[in-house]
Each structure stands twice: as C-alpha cells, then as structure tokens.
Image (tube, rainbow, N blue to C red; front, side, top):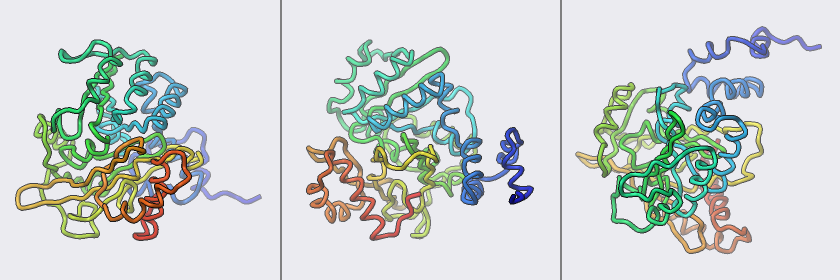
Length: 349
C-alpha cells in the first residue's frame, strides 16, 4: 500500500478547511495548484469555481441549473457582467443581478426558460407586457447605439428578490461585452467554459483599462468598479506580450485568456463552444482606447460573429463552406481552432 503524503491526506479530507486555505491563494496560484493532480483540480473547482452553487440562488436547485445550461448550449446564451466577475474573483456582491446575453435569433429560448422557472417579466413603458410578444421588436433593426453599442433590447425578469436581465444583442453578445466601459467586466460564462479575457490585469494587478464606448451610464459604471478596487487607466500597452497590447489580434480562449472548464469531468466539445470564433483588437490614440473588429455574417450561419483577423476567415472560408458538418457555425468553430493552433500555437485551455 502506497502511503499518502500529509499534503494529499489534507486534500482527501471529506470536510476540511479547504475553503479557508484557498481564500488566501490568488487566482493565478490556484490555477497552478489545479495543474498538480486530478484530486486537487476537482477540489479547487468544487470549492472555488462551482458555478452550480452560484446559479442555484437564481434557479432553485441543481436540476434547474442543469436545464439552464442545456438551454445555454442550444441558444449560445452567455453570462457576463458582475456575475462572471464574481465567479472568477470568488467574491459576492450583495444584491447583484444575473446578466444574460442572447443572440437575437435565439432569444426566445432564454425567455421561455425564465418564465418556466417562475420569473415574471417586468416590462418598461415602451415594451409589450408579454415578453414573447416583445421579442419581434427586440430583434427588429434599430438605429445604432441603442442602449449602448450592440444592444437591441433589455428585458427584466423578477422572482422574489432575484432579478435577471436578458440583454438581446443586435448582432452578437460578444460585441456588447467587448463594448463594456472597462476591462474588469469582460468575462464570459458559457454552457461549458468560463473565459476571463484580461485575467492578469483584472485579478493580479488590479488594472482597469477604460474602453470608450457609447450609451448612457458609462462613468457611473466605471466609478462602481473603482469603488470595488479597480482604479481606471486610459493607457493601453504597446507590448505584444501584454494582454492589453494595442493592435494585437485577441481571440476568446487565446493564450492570454484564463479558460476554465466549468464541468472538468465532462467530455469536451459535445456541443461546440461557439464563443471561441470571436476575435478583436484594442486600438488607441492620444485620448481614447477602443475595441475594433469586423462583423462576420452569412445566410447559412446561425449567428453573427466579430472578427479582427479577417485574413483568418479568408484563409479558412472555402473549407468551411465545403465542410460536411450540418451546421455551418460548427464547421467554422473547428476551422477557426485549427487555424489558431497552426498559426500561433494558441493555448485553448
């Protein structure tokens, strides 16, 4: 019989002070700890990054959370905003809402889920009292910058003291998320993975890069995160080795991203995580910093995507169209990952 080390005996304790120990360890060091062995990886996931625990407070029990995640997979609905930040940073902001981001063509799925889970729609004066009846107006073409860049509509749902906002994108949720007022809130939770797009700045150096965007409330939003410990800076990096580097193509899930499987024991890619198709750049001049991309759309694509590396799409598009995959978005997903691995050695996990 192989005798376990004292350290492993500690991690094997059924009811140990793991949460206290892990609370003193930075997110970066926790990632390194997770790489030591399967047992520690599972324990850190279960103790620190358990999305089910976070979502139970909104949906009631683990079975409803699983149903929610299946809905996410079918509709490519994302969690972002303060909920995703709390998940990665292992903090709780009392009274915070759950923010969901949906593609317009698939918005009916999260609406139906929320109603079936006991939430009621709280319409604004300009909205239909029926959430499903409001959707045609939500996805109808609107003028630019409605409620902020990339947002077509916002639907509020309440259940007791809980509030969920469903933000419906004009084109794609990632356009809205990458148009947030600053980088600390640029984190995403899909049905399968969590992506912190600026992890070193957000969780190690407490750096918040101001992103110039349109819409009301930008300064109030920035001040909220200043109060939470992220002083704002307008200075992007000129280094290509920095996640905040200018004019550098970034992809969701690239080597700069903290990518965290939400279900570490589940087989990968049973339902492709289409969020990885999106890419962007940071650009700046003497006064402003913005995010830039082009919009990728095609009649056979289920969703739209933002793409900074147009050359990548040109290089793979013929293969995508010739793919036998029944859904063009799935073929594009796999082609993008192959392209990234062959050209940049991108780390996807």
